[in-house]
Amino acid sequence: MDQAWWSPGLTHPDGRSAFCLWFTGGIFVNQDGIRFVNESQAYDRLGREVVAALADGSVTLPYWMIYDDTEGVLPPVKATNVSMVEPEKYIDAGLWLSADTLEELAAKLGIPPQNLVDTVARFNDFAERGVDEDFGRGDEAYDRAFSGGVPPLYAIDKAPFHAAAFGISDLGTKGGLRTDARARVLRPDGTVIPGLYAAGNASAAVMGHSYAGAGSTIGPAMTFGYIAALDLAAT
Image (cartoon, rainbow, N blue to C red; front, side):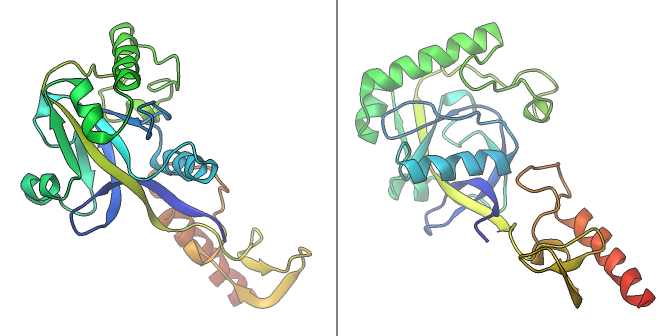
Protein backbone atom coordinates (compact mmCIF):
# COMPACT_ATOMS: atom_id res chain seq x y z
CA MET A 1 0.00 0.00 0.00
CA ASP A 2 3.02 2.29 -0.18
CA GLN A 3 2.76 2.67 -3.95
CA ALA A 4 1.18 5.37 -6.11
CA TRP A 5 1.42 6.70 -9.65
CA TRP A 6 3.80 9.42 -8.54
CA SER A 7 4.74 12.50 -10.52
CA PRO A 8 6.47 15.85 -10.03
CA GLY A 9 3.94 18.48 -9.06
CA LEU A 10 3.96 22.12 -10.13
CA THR A 11 2.99 24.07 -7.01
CA HIS A 12 0.05 26.43 -7.49
CA PRO A 13 -1.00 29.50 -5.45
CA ASP A 14 -3.79 27.53 -3.77
CA GLY A 15 -1.17 25.22 -2.25
CA ARG A 16 -1.66 22.24 -4.54
CA SER A 17 1.32 20.56 -6.14
CA ALA A 18 -0.38 19.03 -9.16
CA PHE A 19 0.62 16.47 -11.76
CA CYS A 20 2.47 17.78 -14.80
CA LEU A 21 4.69 16.53 -17.61
CA TRP A 22 6.12 17.49 -21.01
CA PHE A 23 9.01 19.74 -20.10
CA THR A 24 10.58 21.77 -22.91
CA GLY A 25 13.40 23.10 -20.78
CA GLY A 26 14.64 23.49 -17.25
CA ILE A 27 16.33 21.31 -14.66
CA PHE A 28 15.38 20.33 -11.11
CA VAL A 29 17.70 21.30 -8.27
CA ASN A 30 17.56 20.60 -4.55
CA GLN A 31 18.05 22.93 -1.60
CA ASP A 32 21.79 22.98 -2.28
CA GLY A 33 21.40 24.04 -5.90
CA ILE A 34 22.42 20.59 -7.15
CA ARG A 35 20.64 18.75 -9.94
CA PHE A 36 19.43 15.36 -8.72
CA VAL A 37 17.35 13.58 -11.36
CA ASN A 38 16.57 12.95 -15.04
CA GLU A 39 13.74 15.42 -15.57
CA SER A 40 12.48 13.80 -18.80
CA GLN A 41 12.00 10.22 -17.64
CA ALA A 42 8.54 8.70 -17.23
CA TYR A 43 6.68 10.71 -14.60
CA ASP A 44 6.05 7.69 -12.37
CA ARG A 45 9.76 6.86 -12.21
CA LEU A 46 10.65 10.51 -11.73
CA GLY A 47 8.12 10.84 -8.95
CA ARG A 48 9.44 7.76 -7.15
CA GLU A 49 12.96 9.17 -7.29
CA VAL A 50 11.73 12.40 -5.73
CA VAL A 51 9.92 10.44 -3.00
CA ALA A 52 13.11 8.48 -2.27
CA ALA A 53 15.18 11.68 -2.16
CA LEU A 54 12.68 13.27 0.23
CA ALA A 55 12.91 10.19 2.44
CA ASP A 56 16.70 10.26 2.68
CA GLY A 57 16.83 14.04 3.14
CA SER A 58 18.81 14.82 -0.01
CA VAL A 59 15.83 16.85 -1.26
CA THR A 60 13.45 19.05 0.70
CA LEU A 61 10.25 20.78 -0.37
CA PRO A 62 10.01 22.75 -2.43
CA TYR A 63 12.59 21.73 -4.96
CA TRP A 64 13.01 24.08 -7.91
CA MET A 65 12.83 24.01 -11.67
CA ILE A 66 15.52 26.34 -12.98
CA TYR A 67 14.93 27.67 -16.49
CA ASP A 68 15.78 30.64 -18.67
CA ASP A 69 13.73 33.25 -20.51
CA THR A 70 13.40 31.33 -23.77
CA GLU A 71 9.65 31.00 -23.18
CA GLY A 72 9.33 33.91 -20.79
CA VAL A 73 8.40 33.70 -17.13
CA LEU A 74 6.09 30.69 -17.60
CA PRO A 75 7.74 27.39 -16.64
CA PRO A 76 8.47 25.24 -19.71
CA VAL A 77 5.72 22.77 -18.76
CA LYS A 78 3.25 21.93 -21.50
CA ALA A 79 0.81 19.61 -19.71
CA THR A 80 -0.69 20.21 -16.28
CA ASN A 81 -3.83 18.66 -14.82
CA VAL A 82 -4.45 21.90 -12.92
CA SER A 83 -4.40 24.88 -15.25
CA MET A 84 -1.95 27.65 -14.50
CA VAL A 85 -3.46 30.92 -13.34
CA GLU A 86 -2.08 34.44 -13.81
CA PRO A 87 1.73 34.58 -13.39
CA GLU A 88 1.37 37.41 -10.88
CA LYS A 89 -0.33 35.05 -8.44
CA TYR A 90 2.63 32.65 -8.48
CA ILE A 91 5.06 35.53 -8.14
CA ASP A 92 3.13 37.09 -5.25
CA ALA A 93 3.04 33.69 -3.50
CA GLY A 94 6.81 33.32 -3.81
CA LEU A 95 6.45 30.28 -6.08
CA TRP A 96 8.06 31.81 -9.16
CA LEU A 97 11.20 33.90 -8.80
CA SER A 98 13.33 35.69 -11.38
CA ALA A 99 16.71 37.43 -11.47
CA ASP A 100 19.13 38.83 -14.01
CA THR A 101 21.88 36.41 -12.97
CA LEU A 102 22.03 32.90 -11.60
CA GLU A 103 23.85 34.21 -8.52
CA GLU A 104 21.00 36.60 -7.77
CA LEU A 105 18.43 33.88 -8.35
CA ALA A 106 20.26 31.54 -5.97
CA ALA A 107 20.29 34.23 -3.30
CA LYS A 108 16.52 34.62 -3.61
CA LEU A 109 16.12 30.85 -3.28
CA GLY A 110 18.44 30.63 -0.30
CA ILE A 111 20.82 28.21 -2.00
CA PRO A 112 24.61 28.48 -2.48
CA PRO A 113 25.14 30.70 -5.57
CA GLN A 114 28.27 28.94 -6.81
CA ASN A 115 26.55 25.57 -6.66
CA LEU A 116 23.77 26.79 -8.92
CA VAL A 117 26.19 28.44 -11.32
CA ASP A 118 28.27 25.25 -11.53
CA THR A 119 25.19 23.05 -11.91
CA VAL A 120 23.83 25.09 -14.80
CA ALA A 121 27.25 25.31 -16.47
CA ARG A 122 27.62 21.54 -16.31
CA PHE A 123 24.15 20.98 -17.74
CA ASN A 124 24.76 23.52 -20.51
CA ASP A 125 27.86 21.55 -21.47
CA PHE A 126 25.73 18.41 -21.69
CA ALA A 127 23.21 20.29 -23.84
CA GLU A 128 25.94 21.40 -26.23
CA ARG A 129 27.28 17.87 -26.57
CA GLY A 130 23.86 16.18 -26.56
CA VAL A 131 24.76 13.75 -23.77
CA ASP A 132 23.69 13.91 -20.13
CA GLU A 133 26.57 12.23 -18.31
CA ASP A 134 24.94 12.57 -14.89
CA PHE A 135 21.42 11.20 -15.27
CA GLY A 136 21.06 10.01 -18.86
CA ARG A 137 18.36 12.47 -19.88
CA GLY A 138 17.51 11.55 -23.44
CA ASP A 139 19.02 8.06 -23.37
CA GLU A 140 15.64 6.30 -23.46
CA ALA A 141 12.89 6.61 -26.05
CA TYR A 142 10.36 7.94 -23.51
CA ASP A 143 12.70 10.82 -22.66
CA ARG A 144 12.54 11.94 -26.28
CA ALA A 145 8.76 11.61 -26.68
CA PHE A 146 8.21 15.37 -26.49
CA SER A 147 11.39 16.55 -28.19
CA GLY A 148 11.01 15.25 -31.71
CA GLY A 149 13.19 12.22 -31.06
CA VAL A 150 16.30 14.18 -30.10
CA PRO A 151 17.79 14.39 -26.58
CA PRO A 152 15.69 16.91 -24.57
CA LEU A 153 18.70 18.92 -23.41
CA TYR A 154 18.01 22.66 -23.56
CA ALA A 155 20.69 25.12 -22.49
CA ILE A 156 19.85 27.55 -19.70
CA ASP A 157 21.61 30.66 -20.96
CA LYS A 158 19.11 33.41 -21.75
CA ALA A 159 18.63 35.99 -18.99
CA PRO A 160 16.63 36.69 -16.93
CA PHE A 161 16.68 33.35 -15.15
CA HIS A 162 13.68 31.84 -13.41
CA ALA A 163 12.77 29.30 -10.74
CA ALA A 164 9.42 27.57 -10.17
CA ALA A 165 8.53 25.68 -7.00
CA PHE A 166 7.69 21.99 -7.29
CA GLY A 167 6.38 19.35 -4.93
CA ILE A 168 5.23 15.77 -5.28
CA SER A 169 1.93 14.67 -6.77
CA ASP A 170 0.22 11.49 -7.91
CA LEU A 171 -2.47 10.23 -10.25
CA GLY A 172 -3.84 7.68 -7.82
CA THR A 173 -2.90 4.63 -5.82
CA LYS A 174 -0.81 1.84 -7.29
CA GLY A 175 -0.81 -0.61 -4.39
CA GLY A 176 -3.65 -2.85 -3.34
CA LEU A 177 -4.88 -6.40 -3.28
CA ARG A 178 -2.54 -8.95 -4.85
CA THR A 179 -4.21 -10.98 -7.60
CA ASP A 180 -3.42 -13.93 -9.84
CA ALA A 181 -3.69 -14.23 -13.63
CA ARG A 182 -7.47 -14.71 -13.30
CA ALA A 183 -7.88 -11.51 -11.25
CA ARG A 184 -8.64 -13.54 -8.12
CA VAL A 185 -7.51 -11.93 -4.86
CA LEU A 186 -4.77 -13.81 -3.01
CA ARG A 187 -4.10 -14.22 0.67
CA PRO A 188 -0.63 -13.38 2.04
CA ASP A 189 0.29 -17.06 1.70
CA GLY A 190 -0.62 -17.02 -2.00
CA THR A 191 -3.84 -19.02 -1.79
CA VAL A 192 -7.00 -17.78 -3.53
CA ILE A 193 -9.88 -16.14 -1.65
CA PRO A 194 -12.93 -17.73 -3.33
CA GLY A 195 -15.34 -15.31 -4.96
CA LEU A 196 -13.20 -12.19 -4.49
CA TYR A 197 -11.75 -10.40 -7.53
CA ALA A 198 -9.94 -7.11 -8.07
CA ALA A 199 -8.81 -5.06 -11.05
CA GLY A 200 -7.45 -1.61 -11.84
CA ASN A 201 -6.28 0.63 -9.03
CA ALA A 202 -8.14 -1.51 -6.48
CA SER A 203 -5.44 -4.12 -7.03
CA ALA A 204 -1.68 -4.07 -6.94
CA ALA A 205 -0.36 -2.81 -10.29
CA VAL A 206 0.20 -5.73 -12.66
CA MET A 207 3.49 -4.24 -13.88
CA GLY A 208 4.84 -3.76 -10.36
CA HIS A 209 7.05 -0.72 -9.90
CA SER A 210 7.50 -0.09 -13.62
CA TYR A 211 5.66 2.32 -15.91
CA ALA A 212 4.68 0.74 -19.20
CA GLY A 213 3.38 3.93 -20.81
CA ALA A 214 0.12 5.76 -21.38
CA GLY A 215 -2.86 3.63 -20.40
CA SER A 216 -1.00 1.78 -17.65
CA THR A 217 -4.09 1.99 -15.46
CA ILE A 218 -6.93 1.83 -17.98
CA GLY A 219 -5.61 -1.09 -20.02
CA PRO A 220 -5.08 -3.50 -17.10
CA ALA A 221 -8.35 -2.43 -15.48
CA MET A 222 -10.31 -3.29 -18.62
CA THR A 223 -8.37 -6.48 -19.29
CA PHE A 224 -8.52 -7.96 -15.81
CA GLY A 225 -12.09 -6.77 -15.28
CA TYR A 226 -12.99 -8.78 -18.38
CA ILE A 227 -10.97 -11.77 -17.19
CA ALA A 228 -12.71 -11.61 -13.79
CA ALA A 229 -16.12 -11.57 -15.49
CA LEU A 230 -15.22 -14.61 -17.57
CA ASP A 231 -14.00 -16.45 -14.49
CA LEU A 232 -17.15 -15.56 -12.57
CA ALA A 233 -19.33 -16.74 -15.45
CA ALA A 234 -17.53 -20.06 -15.49
CA THR A 235 -18.12 -20.77 -11.79
